[in-house]
Amino acid sequence: MLHFTSFSFNIFSLTTILSVCLCLDRQPAVASEQLKARFEKEAPRCWQKYRDWCDRLEGTATVTSIRGGVMKAHERFQYTHNASCKLLIRQSQIKHAGTGQVLGYNANYAFVLQRKSNDRPWVLISIGRAESKEYGQIKNELEKGSRFLATLLFTWPDELGDLVKMDSFRVLSAKEIERQGTALVQVEFDNPHPLPGAGEELVPIQNGTLFLDSKRSWSLRAGEFKCAYSDTKSIVTLEMDLAEFPGENPIPQRRLAKSVSRSLDGTVEYKRELRSEFELSVQTRLPADDDFKLSAFGLPEPVGMTGPRRSFWYLWTGGTGILCVVLAVAVARRRKGKARQGGIL
Image (tube, rainbow, N blue to C red; front, side, top):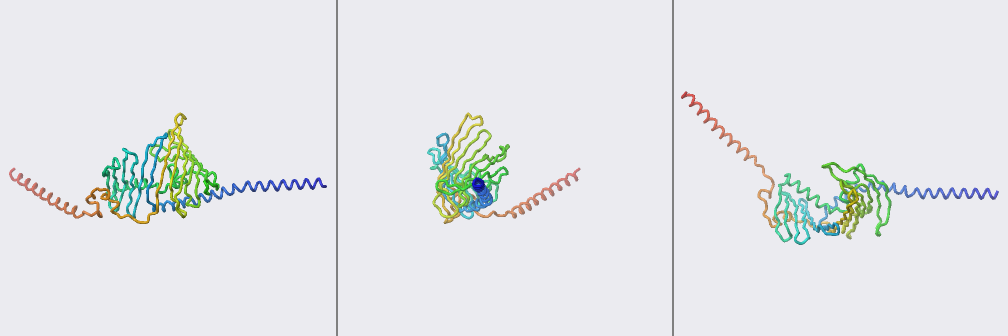
């Protein structure tokens, strides 16, 4: 009897232990699914809200590009805006190769300036009246150039919101971790898709890992991505540092992107670093409209573009009337001439 009781107790204990182990093993899986659901529901909405908030920022970004241990580019970007105007100045920081460019627009016109070095005067390259094709093109280029304001939403080189919208994007797992003293959410994802055809947009990321701050707009704090191109495959790592700024909307201070690319046959390897330093702040004073005009760069204001477009319908009407009178006189003379010829014959 004692033997039977002991045996029953051992079976009961073993069953209990197994049940507890199964429950414990199931808990991380349940937590991961819940976190995945949170990410898919909350993150895109938070990204859009944060993207809109970034429109309030102004300041500079200094970007250094290093390839194979050699500095290839060192540029400073300066961005400012008000309610109806925007301005982006890009200036190389390399001696004797300090080319610069200005993209700007105001309520009346958009313009592009260039100079060959930082001690040379600006030269007007392109200008377009408001609502013209040129105006729209310059405005679009400026918007692309100012994306560094929302650098905490960009991978390599795609925006998080665009990446997760792809049909091939799939979250594999999500878990809470601590990274460099900060609580983050680690999201593993897969994104297998073929390379695009000619003229189609390339999204190189095929899979990777996101480290996101769920308490601060689900912003990107680090990442690792495997990318595919027509002639190479790359592994890219990102690390972000934040400036001291309270609240749920973070401001970047530094970003380090490293990539190691190999040719498809494995014979050639490329290494690249992109280092970015940011000095950004929330705009507290709107600059005057005059700061977004050609005259702010020592150039004359364009004639006929400093006010609202006028309607010249009266000129067209008057011109048409004059043309009709001229034609009538010409026809009358021609008929008169023919009548005289007919009388002689």
